Image: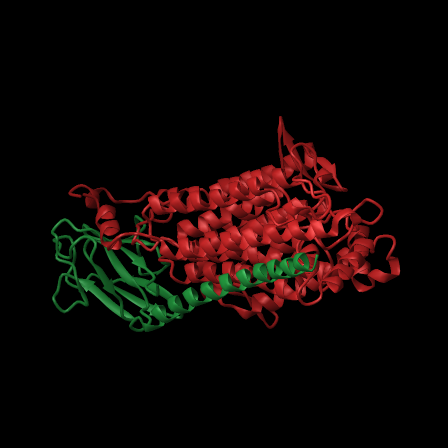
Length: 483
Length: 145
């Protein structure tokens, strides 16, 4: 009997029901059914006045109006959620029970939204069904990773390999990717295509967590003085800055500003969490302002974005069009919203906001669910962040703590950037709203993030492999012999 | 027609109510977790988990919560007694200063090891490090869970 068997046996007192998760999932399922019925009724009542074409067909207020919009897709999704729950129950681990229902709720809202938009926004199966497939894959990743991943050694020990993979992916995209909407983000390999910059987020966090946890004492203890600021010793900071700068540079070359902002914020926050040095925040903020000014002067793309942000109405029929339409959508929504399916009538047969399903889902939800609805959705993101920080605070070692912090920051900061961009609180940058925006790469990445968080939350006293043993093979023969 | 309008309103409100019912339930769970964490006896600075110990003293899997200064050795006066013939009477000390744990070898015969490399003088530790004194291997863990 190994030590781990003992430990796990002691950790598992009594039956492992995951009853909280089941209860929360029931609330999610009932609410989604209500939402689906509301969507069908809403778009049916809109009738011939130009409501979005639902796959089920919704011509006029027929007696069938009081039914669900696309019940098959909804059944698949809810079935997927409960299967994921079952997988987590069968894994017999004491892991977090709130994350799966929370992201399930977000995914369900996404499904309802995508069913409600014109289906021909993407080819193939249509918007709703394609999103359903990706959502199921994402939920599957949450459950699979949450159930299977036990050791974190494969992440911790190969941090430089992961960094190399990440940079390699970015370079491949840059060389062989093709442009979509002026951004070179998509990489196609045979029939598969995806956006590697989504995966880089996870790789960056893994690298930073591994590096910071290993060198934390040195970063706190020693310092280089630059004027009034105390900086950590430069040799230890260099690999991190290099990793970050390469990611940032390539991202800026690709004009993916949202991702650049996300990388910068996550980097700074993790550095602060690891060292508790306020000077980093000050310095990072100054660097951000300086960088912003330089980019504004040099990159026309950035200048356009900032100008739109300062005054979208100046170019309301040109570059500022989407942002103005989004503001109108929020205004139409009011307090309680127009109801699912009743917002955003088509203007001349096209959506008022072209990139609605990827960049502006928050505006669409603001219109249809109102202030009350989007506050609730922001609440769901807050729950994800709270769980992530809680998992970090109870982690047994520094790597796990920093990894959990970084993973929850990915979701949180990303949701903030795009929600605030939709609301014209900050300049709009093209980034996805986790679990809600349309897009396979984003959903897969978010699924991996939440799956890892669930795996990290395991409260059974599990023993991860020790840090960096193979890097320093030293005299142990005399001690190893009897053992 | 009036009925339909009312039904649509009800469904819309039902969806929003479901959203907030979910959040309320989650917040209850979160508060319960936070209270449970707050009721745990004081925040400990760290603890040692015994990974291997050929003599069975201390037992494998045993945990020691650490004070800001903790000594290890074969002597009964050490904070943590390691009954192993390769461990010196006063073998090493763990000290917690400025949010960091340090391991100091107190001139032991067989040395102290962190992740397999020998400690000369004093060495900073991170949570998750594996320490070895004689044949006893321990791991430093964070306790606040």
